[in-house]
Length: 86
Image (cartoon, rainbow, N blue to C red; front, side, top):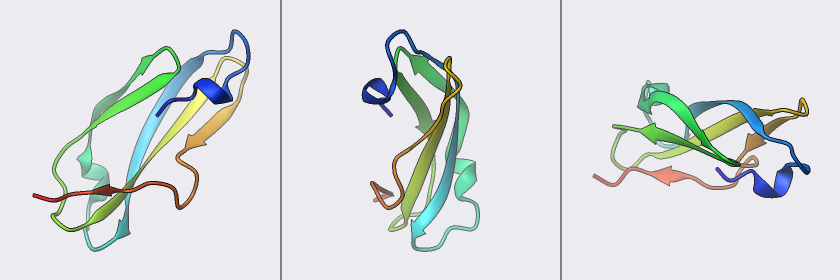
């Protein structure tokens, strides 16, 4: 997730946590796809996701806290989805 447009001048991301849920389909443990810890590079937060169930749409969410005390959650509700195809 790229937070560049949402940060003020000099504001940085100090921490971030990813969660994962099912947007469409069935998977009893979508949170198990989140592997390791989030990586913060400038205003971009990335996360490795592994596994999943073929044909299921997932909704990975990143909650970031900034140096100015903002808590920013991306993507916005109903934006984006991750489809497992194999």
